[in-house]
Amino acid sequence: METSGRNSPDPLEASSNLHDDALNQEIQLALQNKLDQQQAAERTKKKQNAITRTFWGLVMIGGFVALLLMGHAYMVILVMLCQTLVYREVTALFSLKDATPDSGEIEHKKDPWSKTLNWYFFAVTNYFLYGESIIYYFKHVVFADGQLLPFATNHRIISFTLYTIGFMGFVMSLKKGYLKQQFGLFCWVHMSLLLIVVSSHFIMNNILEGLIWFWVPASLVICNDVFAYVWGVTIGRTPLIKLSPKKTLEGFVGAFFSTIIFGLFFGTYFARFDYMICPVHDLGVSAWSSVSCEPNPAFVWRDWTTPAPLNPLLAALGWSAPTIAYTPYMFHLLLMSCFASLVAPFGGFFASGFKRAFNIKDFGHSIPGHGGMTDRMDCQFLMGVFTYVYYSSLIREHHVTVGAVLQTIVSGLTVDEQLELLSDLKRYLSGQGIKV
Figure 1 (cartoon, rainbow, N blue to C red):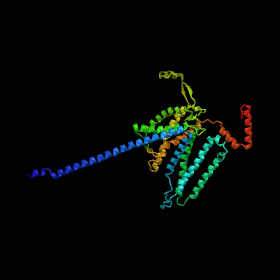
Figure 2: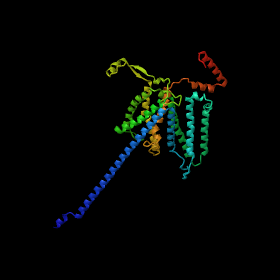
Figure 3: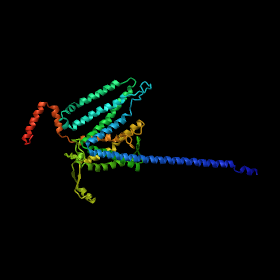
Figure 4: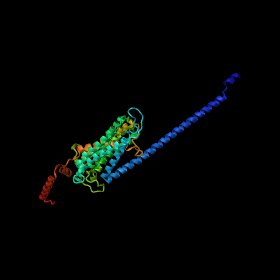
């Protein structure tokens, strides 16, 4: 009986074990429910972000197309607006408002000069660069208008004087104990002007050279960004660069080929319209205006005669024509597509490094679902500068224009010499049977 009593289970201990098991199951069930709720909330958040991002992406594309149809002036205004927002976001990262003195003493004083310095140099730089563009592209108006002539002939000395005033104001504002921060702000402002405002100036020049030199490169960057996201989400597995953990090698390669195909078809289509390829002479024109010009040789269609050994192969593929029509612009599109795919993304990587340095997710919140304007324009600046340098070096034709001749006459001849030239020109035209 004693042995039987020692081997029998303790009812209290068994009840305690059952209670512990039930409690553990309840805890596990609660943790699982909480995990499921978190995953569901995460999926809902991602879905909402995707919807918001898509909606505002379509809004931006729609606005972009609308301004394109409205004319060159509206595209220039768009560039000015974008550069202003980007400049504000970048310079906001460096402020003297809560700067700590060099001595280490904590002192918080409002410093209005930091913003004044930012925007004064921004205004002066824009005055200089946009003035240069107006004088270059509208010589026939500027040098023929007596009221605008002083602006054209003295533009650079006025610009330098304005910059000198800002420089002197900065030196006079230097305060002992804050010198390191103030000189840091001065350098930060000038770096921002170089990377943002000067780049925007080149983009504006692309618009004035012909809308196609702005529209197509900007579209290539957008296309590459979209396809990099699509390919990265679908087949992306290999990280591309540590600065942007979401970028994948598969997305980068897939976007490269997609952008080349898109660029060839997209650019070739818009090269058919004079409104897109003609340099601007009147800022009042729109897509509904009658625009015509002598096209740049890059847009002239040509026929390439296929070599005889390739004819049987082409015939087997169903190609019976002995020639293939093309334009040199197609080769330029190929190179621009390669740049937009292989080099322009590094502007985005550069911006990602910037954000990591300041421990921020986005530069701003001006565009719902997309962050700030800087987050959308980081690649566009690099692409715009490349397009301008490429176009001005390899494509632009240098002709003697009426504006250039007028500039030489106004700035290089005296009034008596101008009258003498006018008299000789009238006599020449009369000799050609042209009534003046």
